[in-house]
Image 1 (cartoon, rainbow, N blue to C red):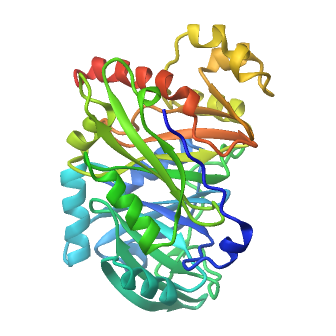
Image 2 (image 1 turned 90 degrees about the vertical axis):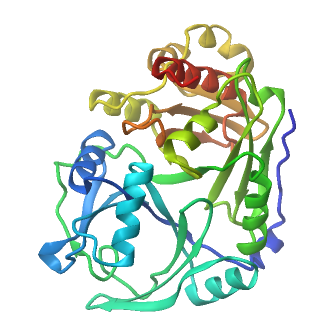
Length: 380
């Protein structure tokens, strides 16, 4: 097992060639945006804040914007494909199922960010342009990343509307309850065998991201399957992108399964930061969210190596929450099962107490839990 951590000096971060403010939105292309928005409202406790559709001039697509704290999801479906964008979205859903098409990043200067990225090798998808309405102006640009995923670069400092021009404020779909998470912690991408280092280099060169952590070797493998993972992040650690690729093993890994059923590289899971993982998991379970199971034996010796946490071991055991500890502190985490019929996209709930890791000590337990689900599906 090799793990490396980058401790970029603060002065170097101030000279970031590609400054970012954070994640702007995770944009999903889905078969039925109305139903998806209802699911994430009820099961994930998100609140609809904006809408775009035929009722306000969008004849081709319908989009629902949901928020929880600073986390923003956008669900878009094609009503009638008549443009290149509409056909792309319709074909994306047909080929990949419901999935992430855009990891949008908020930047202080979209024109400068786009120019830097393209100058350093990015494929430009949309040149910087302004969109306006009565709430102000947003500058947008877009570059390509792995698979058919894009990064839209969003400069919204001059805008006070609910999301973007073309969207109107919208009431919640259901009565909002207590917030279950407050931010996007990280977004994980799966890429083909042998391509991980290429995409790590892409983020290093094109966006000035640094390598935060690296996971390779036996401790990121089980008896049957294996993967390799590296984490890239911007200088302030507001945007973190782990990148996975499969490794040669006896049987099909979770990454192999994803690539097969998704039809290529894409976003595997989104980690959501919560201040109270116990309350979040209880509420989400009650609303029908299914989480991966963890054997009781995991908890028998948990205190010996993970130490004391704010949540008693018996509560962790009851809810199947995982713990990991490093030199900076500890974290609590749990993973959902895939949230659509294809075994592709899932979510992670994470509560951090000092640790900026990604659950290295839980990889083996996590992978074995995923393998149990793969075996039930007949895909191991």
